[in-house]
Image (cartoon, rainbow, N blue to C red; front, side, top):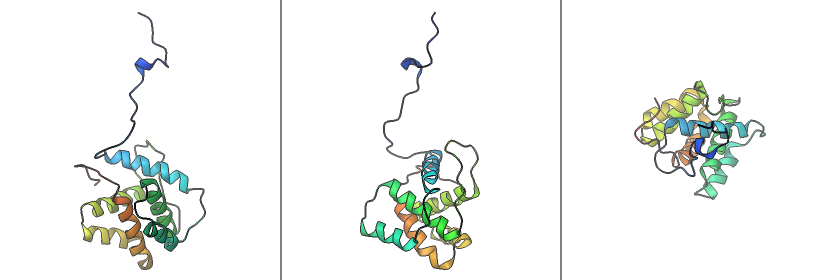
Length: 148
Protein backbone atom coordinates (compact mmCIF):
# COMPACT_ATOMS: atom_id res chain seq x y z
CA UNK A 1 0.00 0.00 0.00
CA UNK A 2 1.55 3.34 -1.02
CA UNK A 3 2.10 6.01 1.62
CA UNK A 4 -0.02 9.09 0.92
CA UNK A 5 1.86 12.29 0.27
CA UNK A 6 1.45 15.07 2.85
CA UNK A 7 -0.33 17.27 0.32
CA UNK A 8 -2.66 14.50 -0.85
CA UNK A 9 -6.20 15.98 -0.91
CA UNK A 10 -7.66 12.74 0.44
CA UNK A 11 -5.75 13.19 3.71
CA UNK A 12 -6.67 16.84 4.26
CA UNK A 13 -9.35 17.89 6.69
CA UNK A 14 -12.39 19.53 5.12
CA UNK A 15 -12.27 23.31 5.12
CA UNK A 16 -15.02 25.48 6.52
CA UNK A 17 -16.47 27.68 3.84
CA UNK A 18 -18.71 29.78 6.05
CA UNK A 19 -20.00 30.02 9.57
CA UNK A 20 -23.70 29.82 10.12
CA UNK A 21 -25.62 29.18 13.29
CA UNK A 22 -24.24 28.93 16.81
CA UNK A 23 -20.48 28.62 17.16
CA UNK A 24 -18.54 27.25 20.12
CA UNK A 25 -17.01 29.85 22.41
CA UNK A 26 -13.53 28.85 21.21
CA UNK A 27 -14.40 29.82 17.62
CA UNK A 28 -15.49 33.31 18.70
CA UNK A 29 -12.49 33.67 20.99
CA UNK A 30 -10.10 32.71 18.18
CA UNK A 31 -11.78 35.23 15.89
CA UNK A 32 -11.40 37.95 18.53
CA UNK A 33 -7.77 36.94 19.01
CA UNK A 34 -7.12 37.18 15.28
CA UNK A 35 -8.68 40.63 15.18
CA UNK A 36 -6.83 41.60 18.35
CA UNK A 37 -3.57 41.03 16.50
CA UNK A 38 -4.66 43.64 13.97
CA UNK A 39 -5.23 46.26 16.66
CA UNK A 40 -1.72 46.00 18.09
CA UNK A 41 -0.10 48.18 15.45
CA UNK A 42 -2.87 50.74 15.21
CA UNK A 43 -2.61 54.14 16.88
CA UNK A 44 -4.70 55.08 19.88
CA UNK A 45 -8.23 56.07 19.05
CA UNK A 46 -11.00 58.26 20.30
CA UNK A 47 -13.85 56.16 21.72
CA UNK A 48 -16.41 58.79 20.68
CA UNK A 49 -15.21 58.61 17.07
CA UNK A 50 -15.56 54.80 17.04
CA UNK A 51 -19.07 54.99 18.48
CA UNK A 52 -20.21 57.67 16.06
CA UNK A 53 -18.92 55.67 13.09
CA UNK A 54 -20.87 52.58 14.12
CA UNK A 55 -23.94 54.62 15.02
CA UNK A 56 -23.94 56.48 11.70
CA UNK A 57 -23.70 53.30 9.64
CA UNK A 58 -25.74 50.50 11.26
CA UNK A 59 -25.30 46.93 10.06
CA UNK A 60 -21.50 46.94 10.07
CA UNK A 61 -19.77 43.56 9.60
CA UNK A 62 -18.61 41.67 12.66
CA UNK A 63 -14.95 42.49 11.97
CA UNK A 64 -15.60 46.24 12.07
CA UNK A 65 -17.58 45.95 15.32
CA UNK A 66 -14.92 43.74 16.94
CA UNK A 67 -12.04 46.01 15.94
CA UNK A 68 -13.85 49.07 17.26
CA UNK A 69 -14.71 47.26 20.50
CA UNK A 70 -11.15 46.01 21.10
CA UNK A 71 -9.59 49.39 20.29
CA UNK A 72 -12.04 51.19 22.57
CA UNK A 73 -11.36 48.83 25.48
CA UNK A 74 -7.62 49.38 25.10
CA UNK A 75 -8.17 53.14 25.11
CA UNK A 76 -10.49 52.98 28.12
CA UNK A 77 -8.23 50.84 30.32
CA UNK A 78 -5.10 52.68 29.20
CA UNK A 79 -3.17 49.65 27.93
CA UNK A 80 -3.44 47.05 25.19
CA UNK A 81 -5.87 44.20 25.80
CA UNK A 82 -4.03 40.96 26.57
CA UNK A 83 -4.97 38.52 23.81
CA UNK A 84 -3.27 35.18 23.21
CA UNK A 85 -2.54 33.90 19.74
CA UNK A 86 -5.43 32.11 17.97
CA UNK A 87 -5.55 28.46 18.97
CA UNK A 88 -3.95 28.95 22.40
CA UNK A 89 -5.39 26.77 25.12
CA UNK A 90 -5.12 29.36 27.89
CA UNK A 91 -7.51 32.26 28.24
CA UNK A 92 -6.18 35.57 29.49
CA UNK A 93 -8.01 37.57 32.12
CA UNK A 94 -8.90 40.19 29.48
CA UNK A 95 -10.26 37.55 27.11
CA UNK A 96 -12.41 35.99 29.84
CA UNK A 97 -13.67 39.45 30.80
CA UNK A 98 -14.63 40.25 27.19
CA UNK A 99 -16.46 36.93 26.86
CA UNK A 100 -18.35 37.61 30.11
CA UNK A 101 -19.45 41.00 28.76
CA UNK A 102 -20.69 39.47 25.49
CA UNK A 103 -22.39 36.62 27.35
CA UNK A 104 -24.17 39.04 29.70
CA UNK A 105 -25.42 41.06 26.74
CA UNK A 106 -26.69 37.97 24.93
CA UNK A 107 -28.43 36.72 28.08
CA UNK A 108 -29.77 40.19 28.86
CA UNK A 109 -28.19 39.90 32.31
CA UNK A 110 -27.91 43.62 32.98
CA UNK A 111 -26.58 43.21 36.53
CA UNK A 112 -23.64 41.07 35.37
CA UNK A 113 -22.99 43.46 32.52
CA UNK A 114 -22.95 46.47 34.86
CA UNK A 115 -20.64 44.64 37.28
CA UNK A 116 -18.17 43.59 34.57
CA UNK A 117 -18.07 47.02 32.96
CA UNK A 118 -17.83 48.80 36.30
CA UNK A 119 -15.08 46.56 37.63
CA UNK A 120 -12.49 47.64 35.08
CA UNK A 121 -13.64 50.72 33.18
CA UNK A 122 -13.71 54.38 34.19
CA UNK A 123 -17.24 55.68 34.73
CA UNK A 124 -17.09 58.03 31.73
CA UNK A 125 -16.41 55.29 29.20
CA UNK A 126 -18.82 52.57 30.35
CA UNK A 127 -21.83 53.60 28.26
CA UNK A 128 -19.77 53.90 25.08
CA UNK A 129 -18.08 50.53 25.64
CA UNK A 130 -21.52 49.05 26.31
CA UNK A 131 -22.74 50.42 22.98
CA UNK A 132 -19.74 48.95 21.14
CA UNK A 133 -20.13 45.62 22.96
CA UNK A 134 -23.81 45.58 21.99
CA UNK A 135 -22.97 46.09 18.33
CA UNK A 136 -20.55 43.16 18.52
CA UNK A 137 -22.90 40.96 20.58
CA UNK A 138 -25.53 41.31 17.86
CA UNK A 139 -23.25 39.16 15.68
CA UNK A 140 -22.31 36.60 18.36
CA UNK A 141 -24.26 33.39 18.85
CA UNK A 142 -22.83 30.99 21.40
CA UNK A 143 -25.78 28.62 21.11
CA UNK A 144 -26.30 26.60 24.29
CA UNK A 145 -22.68 26.98 25.40
CA UNK A 146 -22.09 30.38 26.99
CA UNK A 147 -18.73 31.22 28.52
CA UNK A 148 -18.32 30.86 32.25
